Image 1: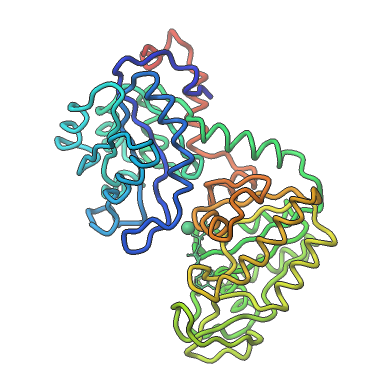
Image 2 (image 1 turned 180 degrees about the horizontal axis):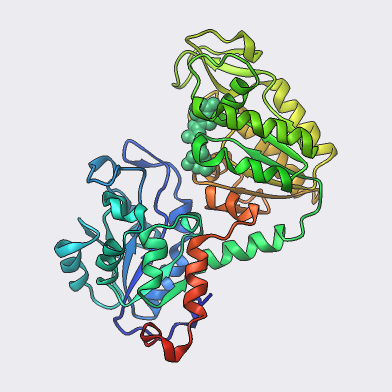
Length: 411
Ligand code: ADP
Ligand code: MG
């Protein structure tokens, strides 16, 4: 992989910088700025090289069409602030005339943020025409999002086949940290998986079973597993289509001797809002109009005991409850605190990843409490499984091009 520190002075060349500005946000307010602050060194290095910087990102899941709720406009001020008040311009479209005009107005050393890539269906389809439309805007492509590199999307893969392609500092650092800590982990290892992106993550658990001795399933993910084990789940968030998959995963875990820890008690409420009345119950006691929103104390205790007595390496993706609303943060915060304590004592190595997971750890003041905090969730899990990430492969394939064979290499 070629990295941006290998780039010469760029003297006004336009860099298309793909980052992950998919930050946790409530009503237009950014809840956690980790993903912004982590890309600043890359932007600063490119500014020092006198590049014109065009930032590309997705935000949320608009369905391939403009939707103001998913605009990247609210990110402009936060980016500017993180860049010590350097002006950040905004382009209302990511391709076409408006984008071109915004790019043409840039001077060397200036920064432009373009609108959400996912307003076009071509982004997620890795459509060659959409990739071409993006590539037209710049001279060099930089990928600084490990967190999106498991997606074969236009701005991750397509662009890297059209322009000279380089890895940013964050992407390089994430890979280096994961490799250092996890290439030969001290066993036994525990994976903690929670969160709400059930459909994208549940199937990953199958391979994860081969890698870890202990698997904790929490968050909304656990609800599908509780249903698979025959428990009612009321109106909890879950994925009925994946009950069978969950059942197979549980059967597989038994065969492999991987210990699965699922909630034995849960915190339920009738609505997901702050400070609503709650009950701690066994899952089978749930009423039809209740939902599971956190782990109960007995489950937390079981996880803590296992961590303390057995585990040497922890990988964690996905909050264990709806931590944004008090008191449903208790499970996530409790387990985070014990992992941080054991890490501090040198008894375990710990890595957590994922936008919301990082937000949860930051909210409880543990942003420095783990061995490493990755901005990536799904990509981190796929990397852990040993899968090749298409975005990384695209960068590697550019790096292996022979100079004489590629016009792309001439900057
Ligand atoms: P990450 O961003 O760390 O990869 P996800 O995006 O998969 O994690 O999931 C994070 C979200 O999961 C949080 O917003 C949290 O509120 C939600 N969540 C966790 N547990 C539950 C639950 N039991 N019911 C509903 N939402 C939950
Ligand atoms: Mg998330």
